[in-house]
Image (cartoon, rainbow, N blue to C red; front, side, top):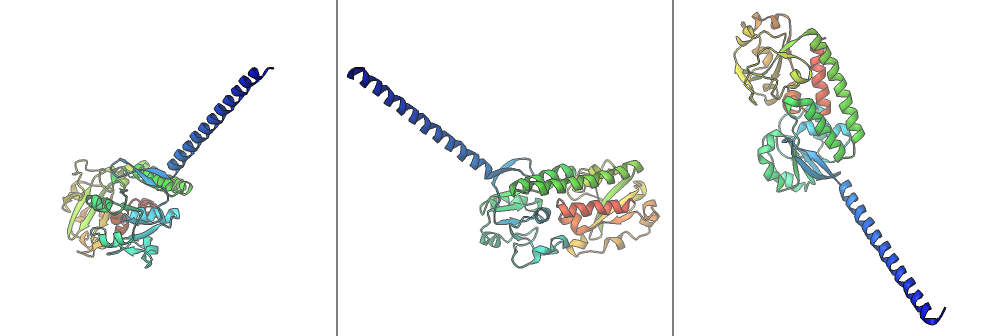
Length: 323
């Protein structure tokens, strides 16, 4: 091979090596970019809020302020140790007694937020419920905020979404699935008993001397839509606070069970529901004569639906009533 040919061959080899090196470098850069994108995906998770909208949150937040007692219950039962503050004014549910420790900062009450206390905690995430929904913009000025209130009229689907999302957020997927599976099995068992007996029910709230009844499209929809009781009155107003009625209502709308939530037991106001219902008119009803007026654990049913332990207790109360 003459010198000219050798130079041409050498040039081709150098050019080839350069192209190969560039291709490899470019490929490496693309792989690095792909890995970075995958890493970014792994550090965030989509949460479905109470309005059905998606929120992108960073995984495993270390400092979380929780205003929804049901969510606090879920985090406790999933083994998540990230809560730094929650509302402790008023009557705290016994289920959440672990949070009475001073290391958990009091951030007000379910209805009145101490925003200065929230801000002082420098939270990574704030989780609110329905009672704080109107102040969500104020919370978002402090930290990323999501409303995870469970929808009572579609209780189990909503509950499963919240538990699954929190399981994904804190890498507690197995614990979340186990809790959901156990609750679904309990609900199916109670539902079978109720539907086989063809039982009907009225759900009532007692509040400072007045009573209101609630429909299947209310916060107490679990009793109807999940546990299988039929409504005796399908014309109840779908109001957040129920439809106010008198005791004569139960003489006309004869249900097998009346389940009573005593708001006064939570607020400390008004006569106890058991005394309120012990009257001449109510005592004439078959439901009273049969001993089927059931006074529910009002702290759970009124302030912390949507939790894992609270939902289990709610189901157990109904199961005990229909044995």
